[in-house]
Structures are given as C-alpha cells and as structure tokens.
Amino acid sequence: MRNNQRKAAISAYKERKIAAGIFAIRCNPTGAVWVGKAPDLATIQNRIWFELRQGNSRHASLQQAWRDHGPEALSFEIIERREEEDVAYVRARLLQARLDHHAADLGAERL
Image (cartoon, rainbow, N blue to C red; front, side):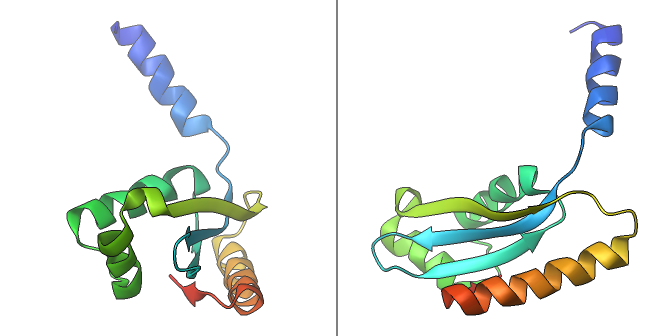
C-alpha cells in the first residue's frame, strides 16, 4: 500500500460514523442470553470473541458457555442502534437505560 493510500484509509477510518447501541449474545443449545452496551457496535463482537478465545472473559457464565458448546453455538445480534450523540454522558445514560430495559425484557444477564 502506498503512503498516500495508507493516509487516505486512515483518514476514512477516523471519519466514519460510529453507532453505539445494545447487543445480545445467545447460546443456542441452552437458550441463555447476555446483553451489553457498546460505544461502537462495529467492533464489539470482535473484542468479545477475542476475550473468549483467550479464556479471559470477565463474564464467567459466558466463558463457560463458550467452553462447553464452542463458538458456533453462540450468536451475536444487534438489538438497538443509537446514532452518535453529541454529549458522551447523555449517550452513556441512554445506553444504560436501554440496556436495563432489554435485559429485563429478555431475561438476560448483563455484560
């Protein structure tokens, strides 16, 4: 990759729209559900799957489901997408409220 192409790619990455939101991870064999919030939905699944592969997840029940059933038994879905808010604390409060709602609605464990 040439230097100017690299600079253009970096610039495009920095200028991309970031969507925050709520996601769910489901264990198909057991029916267990975990919900979480993320400031960037485009990157959260990769981060969680990396932690699970390394055996470093902070969420013992999710790590156990990964060990017992394998990665193919877990599915990731975006439940709610929020466009970028101007003020970070407003976004954080909205995401927390929506996380609480979806966790109660789905009977899910919070991540």
